[in-house]
Image 1: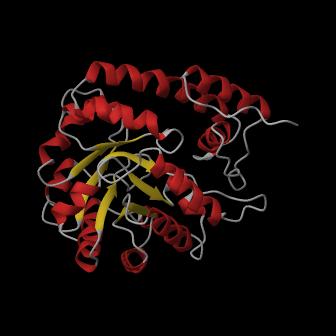
Image 2: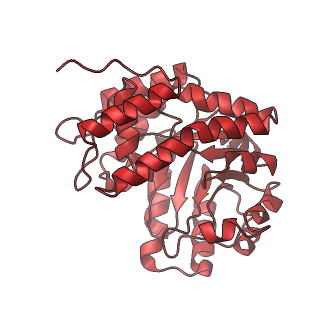
Length: 319
């Protein structure tokens, strides 16, 4: 697919979707098929969003090499061309990354979210070679997961300037360190490259991102209640930024406080997401150990929180 076409597809709120598990922690592919249809029916369609499977918030690093391809294939088949599908490729060396991306391409992914090989302790030059070699070897898009949270996972803006001719690198998941975001001009630097890359905000700043010419954002809620983020996207595209900020903060603020609180008891990126899915009537199991599921009291707290947003939460199940 041509670079310009790929860039047209990787836009809007990125739906980093949960991986459904059954009671024995096996991937529930039937549930994934049903959820994909539900996401599409509720607004996640081409030009508005991307469904991204097996990413970190979807517990991708915990999936077996026999599981994530089946999960991707299930999603692509259910989507049937109505929304682009991506998948996460995590922390692989160059050879493994190329092998996995070629498999993802064969299964119908339009792009991958590709993390640097952090466990190799890469330098920035190593990472540039990694992305260049992978880009040359494949024929689908790459969204670079640029993260300060893991040593060796971040690339400088100067590094990205050297990547503008990497044909299949079409988007950047932008997340500078929190200390840098407050420095005037630091967050904004990357937006000088919007002619070459789609910039996808990953630091709770969709309004800031769109004001600067960005193309999308990562959010906890896209697959929980898609209509919320489609409404937010409409406000952003119509430059109604004050309304967009109010809507975003009214939801993201309380969820962030709740996530920090329950995260003191147990970790795992998908715990709160799966709790919200249950409250909204789309239960998809709990995270694999060692992560602990939310307590019943925490689920009920979530239920009241989402109800306060005006979302159509499911009725409390009968015991």
